[in-house]
Length: 478
Image (cartoon, rainbow, N blue to C red; front, top):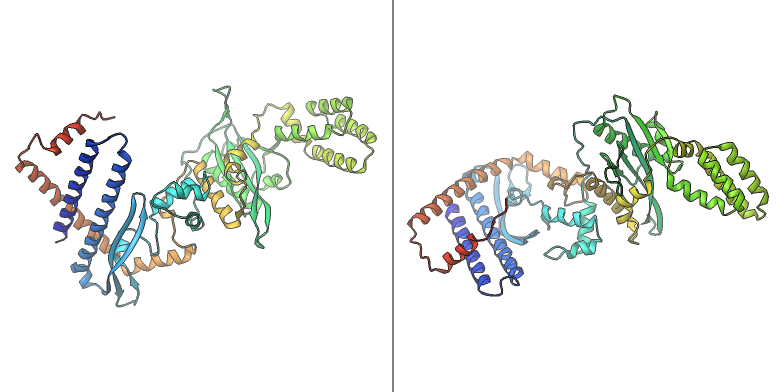
């Protein structure tokens, strides 16, 4: 019965598909493709819905189900799930397990639909992939059928903890450059007030590729951005990623490129032998600030002291500049700027005098997080910011979301418990049964199509044959 029903459904789809293509060829072909696509997808959804309902009847009438502890509680419950090609609506049977007393829709499990799931996992992945580059509202408008921006937000918040797989083959290198900085992002605090929070960002590479002089690129880059973790945890996670990508057994030289912030200097716990190098952008930024309080001659001497890496000369000329500053507020600001240089002068000297690669911390922040998190003017929820940061890191490292990463409920413990319960009851045997049945149906259908082709007298003047001739002339790509 199931074989005949599914075969008839597929044959009806074949007829509808050829009819749609034939009608498209008779009109304005190039300008009617969108309508053709819409009709084909709609007919595909109808066909899949019908097949799913037949599968429910097959499971219900199977010997395996009748011998098991599952008894029918209710029939014909309707469900609609939005997918990449449209909405799939089908009816299924509600069962009760005699031994455990649990209720479930067996068909949902067999076709991969979780309880309370309104979007397919493929559609959820597409939405999140769009949301990492644009607002939730724009991401929602890019897909059909319509979903709300709150739905996109819910998919993000219920996402499992994900991380890109690092290749097993470790790369051997003489040095590792780590660029560390932070992105300042607007967020809503627990009290609902808007505030600025810090998102640590780090990029590790084995050097810089200058094969294209106008656009240098990092070699073997690794990206990490996290929100809501202590700096010790952040550096531990960074070390774990680096140790999986690069071979640390040969003791490569490790350079930390940063702006000298206090939290960044805690890298010594995870990278005890690393060398701090001041970021070039911040040297120029603060040098420009400190010169605003000095005369032209003193400014020139302070700049020379920084370029030569001479701390004594720098302090000497700063003392002279301080003697000429009369305003108390200006003196206080100048002292703070001077302290910044003095506290980081070793890193400044390495930047100016040693042969280390160029610094790009600000650019990395822009590429990894700022473009999505802090430039749009939006304020994030704390949970949403953590999840989006995780998602950006995943895709930056060349990873992608999988169906297993998508959850319906934000309570991941409840989700895991529900799946464990299904496994305990033994739903896998029904999956094996359906796989066998589907294989038999496909085999029988192919034999039927082959026999029908042999018995069929071809009318070369029919609309179908004309259509097939036209389709055969379309060039194929290899």
